[in-house]
View 1 (tube, rainbow, N blue to C red):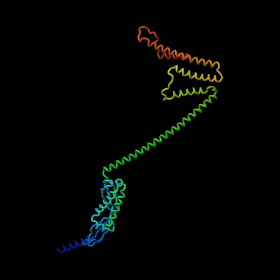
View 2 (view 1 turned 60 degrees about the horizontal axis):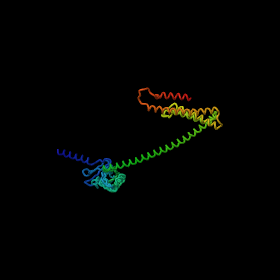
View 3 (view 1 turned 180 degrees about the vertical axis):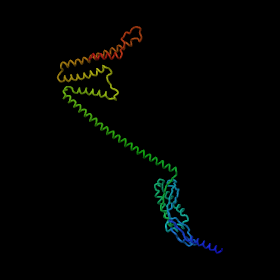
View 4 (view 1 turned 90 degrees about the vertical axis):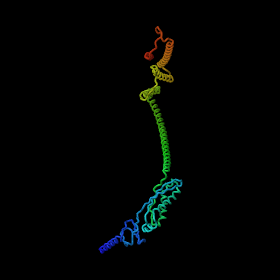
Amino acid sequence: MIGMIFIGVVLLAIVLTIFDGYYIVRTREAAIVERLGKFVTVAHAGLHFKLPWVDRVRDKISLQVRQLDVMVETKTKDNVFVQIPVAVQYEVVQGREREAYYMLSNHEQQIVAYVQDNVRSSVANMDLDDSFSSKDTIAQNVAMSLRDNMAAYGWHFVNTLVTDIRPDTRVRESMNSINAAQREREAAIAQAEAEKIRVVKEAEGAAEAKKLQGRGVAEQRKEIVEGIAQQYEMLRAAGVQENPETLMLVSQYLDAMVDVADRSHTNVLYMPSNPGGMQDLFGGMRDVLLSTQAINNEASGGLDREQRECLEQLRAQKTQRAQQAAREVQQQAQQSAQAIEQPPYSGGAPQSKAPQTARQYFDELRDQLKGDN
């Protein structure tokens, strides 16, 4: 029985010795091997053997790139407190795992101390606006400081990033207000410049339009003058030798009257308000034509008998119309005076003639016009 127990203990010791005689290291790792508490070697990825019960794997170090986030609170040159997050990316230098493991008890605390010291010394010489534009400069200064101070311990710093600069909330709101005011000012200036350009262009366009309109009016008047001259020559060529300009003026007057009557937007046209006025209008036109012809005939060699009689008739008609108008005015004045002197109510028959109605007045005017004709 004792023999079987001894054999079992021996077999167990052999199995434990076999399992303690080798170890495996993963990729991108390094194993620190010690023999009786003393450093022996550094083992990298793969299967390795060691002396059982004598050698042991003290620890395994990762060879991957690590990242350490450090938050630094500091004050700028213009006395503004800011928080600056810094991301430090670093790794163990292959071949110097012994220094990286044994020389620093806590390498992360060493890195944080170097980062904080360098960031505070750099930002203290900058204003807040300069610190925003100098993030790369701050990151370069931190990286150089870490490389110079931590290279002896077997650490390599791949990159150092200043990810943000965070001032106080009130300071940030004030900066946003300042930027918004500047943007509004620039927008107002740009809008004013655009308005100025628009006004200038409109003025230039209006001036050019007036210039072209003036040229058009000048060309129109030129064509009108040439047309009148052609009409004058055509009338003379057609046999109208005496006073063709008078005929042209009358024709233009009638054309103008027709044109005014045809226009739909014409609202007011001042014309005589009674038949007598229309008769005077056409009589005046006829008298002008005949008088002009008579004057031209006298200038050219005298009047014949028929023309003198016609001229005498015209003068007599003018005199008769003037006398008739005077009598009508006198009669209307007498009627108004009688209407004022007569009492409003009387028992007997009316002594004066009743006032005429509008229809009777226009009938009398029509009869007078027929008598004149």
